[in-house]
Amino acid sequence: MNILYGTLTEFCTAGNCPTMTAGPKYEYRWADGVTIKKPIEVSAPKYVEYLMDWIEAQLDDELIFPQKLGAPFPPNFQDVVKTIFKRLFRVYAHIYHSHFQKIVSLKEEAHLNTCFKHFVLFTWEFRLIDKGELAPLNDLVESILKL
Image 1 (cartoon, one colour):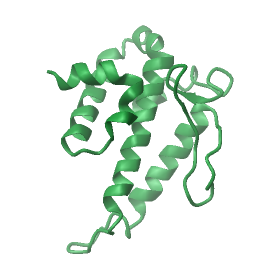
Image 2: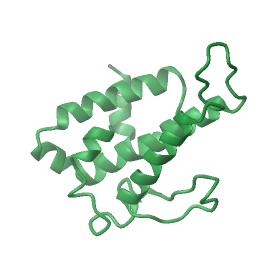
Image 3: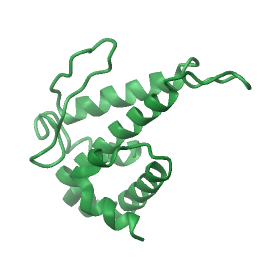
Image 4: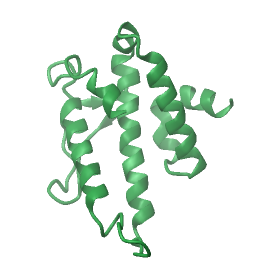
């Protein structure tokens, strides 16, 4: 998904996407719970930047993702993973709502759709995202899950 989003960086700018949205009904604010405790409004590219940096920090934290064989996972491990996937979904929702026509013109829609299908099936199988969080792409998600 990061590679697909990377193809949109010249189109998804602070000027074109001043807030992180998924259509007119959904706006996402950023908070990492550490340096930014209260959710703040940021542009879509800034949200994605914060998100990718935050995910990298989570993955690199051996207290959350142990590297040593037999090391225990923390009690909040599932919550951290769910938050990662919930926030990654928001990027997919933004791409579909705000940049799908550009994805089509770049001939990337098959890649986006395949990545998103795998994402949905994986998150559904392991119950990583609450159904309500999927609302911005509900019709698309429902079509994937019925196949």
